[in-house]
Figure 1: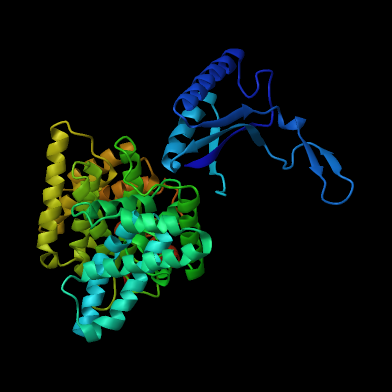
Figure 2: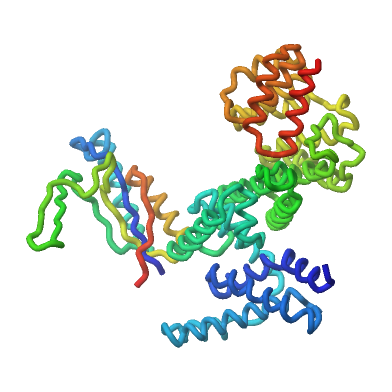
Length: 119
Length: 412
């Protein structure tokens, strides 16, 4: 089995409803994502998943040289930021891609699939 | 070439993919499979001249490659604790299951054409792993530097390994989408052979067209009900049937209307026509809808049915391009439709359509325009269009043809 990171990217600009256009759309996406998460758990693919606060809440820390330096904001400036992720365990990429397609549909976002380096 | 050298060349062509596929299934590692297959052929080159060609050369190569792979894994196991894995591999796989071999090769094609790989990597990997072409050969075929091709192959293999792209034919539900990618790769290989873009090589490359046909046959044999696979095979066969007549003795491209139709390969045409008819009946019976390759095959069936260019059923060809334009409204389809329309409604009508297309960087667009302009007597504009086409074309036979056309304008 291989562990995969499924990252969801969304626009930097967020409304009161996150990256969704309306409250209904947000609630529907949340419900669909919840159902998808349950299925991942039931079928044994689940490792961990969560959503992130807006990229503006990020702080970059550089502790490499003596006194650590703290900088407000995300490490990379971008129009789209990581909004949440799943970590799943799957036998191969085809299974992971199928799950990513379902996850993408549920959360209404594009999903990047990337394997973890095997130890 | 000596008999032994000939035998090795033949076995390499016929058995390479089979050996790589069976090693990949057994060891789950493309790199290892390829290296050991190459080593086994190297051993054959060394031994067969003195020992003689074995009665079952393909089996000999597979056995030798398998032994070398196991030796390699054993050696490595002393270093990095893969002993158990090697033992499992050694004991876990019984004698080769007959009948599963061809499926193995198809699995290899689908692995090399996985949608997670970039299209150029899919092409390079398919030619290397399934076609047995070397990196310089692939580089030359696609006008790309050897080092770049090498990097693409290495990166693709790395992704297959790290992301665990499975070595299998995709499940039924994924198949239509995956087959489309495989067919794109095979068609690109065929086209590069049919009209080579490399000015350093012969203008028509039978090695590539035949390889593409061989692989498409394989896909067709395993997915006989897929209309587009049959369509692509028919398209390739009907195009290949004309290959020997496409370049003149002086190395100039010969267009369809000037080709010696008596020299077309009748067997390939018969086979291609049979496939097209099969598809037409299937569609008539409500089994599927014709896609791009089936329509293009039908166009070629109309061309190859005519004994003379004047006998060609141009209205049928225009109707087929209309059908193609509905599923693929691209300017290239519109350009090909206009060429047929010129035969039906005259060059003025066709030129009006062509002038609206945005294809300035495409040499065939300028050749078509030049030809239409020439036919309606606008020589100066025709000359300019031929010049532009000469600048853009890379195929030597095509450049020679366009140049002659331009020069004929000067005399007139």
